[in-house]
Image 1 (cartoon, rainbow, N blue to C red):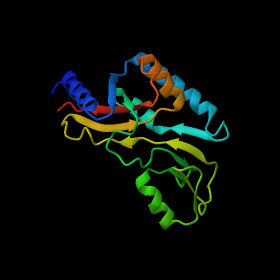
Image 2: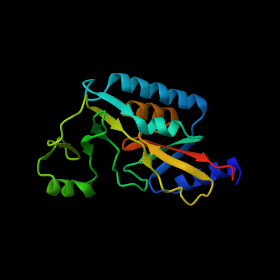
Image 3: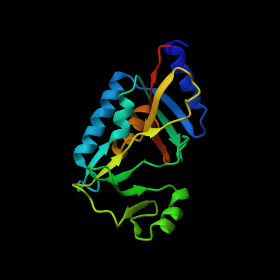
Length: 191
């Protein structure tokens, strides 16, 4: 398939995922706006500015040949299990806390009785001592929904910060409650 056909096939696949309301290929202007909003969010930090924040997921998506934003309804719709969506980590990569999907919460409670939940879905591991200054990390997440499109390589996804999510949804005309965005990026092989 040529470049345009690959992009069209990916768009069609993403539109077919339950809960996806819209798909938009990012042009250079929208990419620049997303970079700007994410830079502002990183400067502001997490937890009311008390902690550093890094969005490696959005950075990874923006580094791919083709980037798109999905506008979704209600819930996470891609094929992953929510591992890695939000971490509190340290410079050594040690996970000090993390967002847990419903399927992992009980498992963590059983396996790590010293862990404490700061909310229903965010756990802190009391037995781990930070090596350096901790920070919040939104990491890139693999996306396997595109694995069978032969020319697609290095597919990844990321979640934008609340600031960026709101601005992008507004630009795209999706201000309804219980909608959110997800970014997807991929490279295209020449073979």
